[in-house]
Image (cartoon, rainbow, N blue to C red; front, side, top):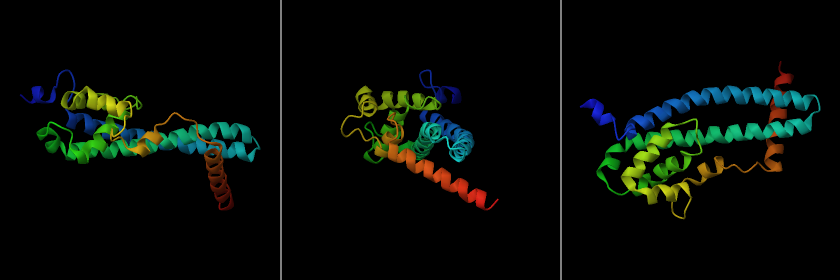
Length: 183
């Protein structure tokens, strides 16, 4: 009986998928932090050696990593919200208003966060529960879809502005100067 309870039409149930997504995000966080630290060190070296143009190109990747890192934090919170409110989700046919942002945001993130495959499983579960229209509204960012605006911004494929690049480069340079002063 327990196996059939977890098995849900070729996938896993929403609680399992959400918990697995949280675990995967925690693993990705550690990896991403290490990568960002190394990239910042590399940019600091480029700035010290006067290779500003190369540093400007590389800083785009740092910004992208920071955005994905922040998006993963949102996704983790929304997954934890789904787990904690699963009884409410199970009882209601329609998506509860107080959970709409979290559920719609997870649906929106699923095709954009390929390193978290559990989001695809959650999207399929929510599609069965709430219908294709609800899922397509979140995926296509229709008005009143409920997707979190900050998550949309963090998962955007738009390149960062020159201002943002310069700001991050200054932060890296300031931290590098501070470290050199006290080492």
